Image 1 (spheres, rainbow, N blue to C red):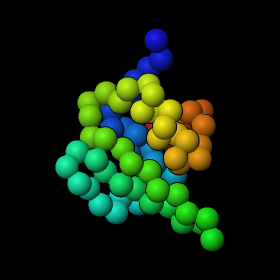
Image 2: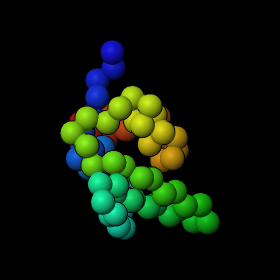
Image 3: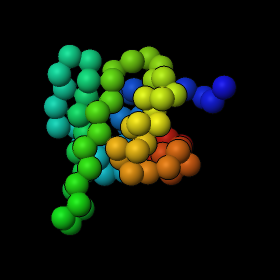
Length: 74
């Protein structure tokens, strides 16, 4: 089974990838990144361990691969 990350680790890595936390509603944290005319919005649930399907959805929303995210974690 792949390594699971916490929301805190994922959010920190996304912030290093130039995403900004813009709001939180309940346990869901919204991050946004704008590059030129392209913008990306990512919703991350504030959990201790993010499920693999949710993790894959976060990567898809952010437009990055797992390898790239893991580089920002280190």
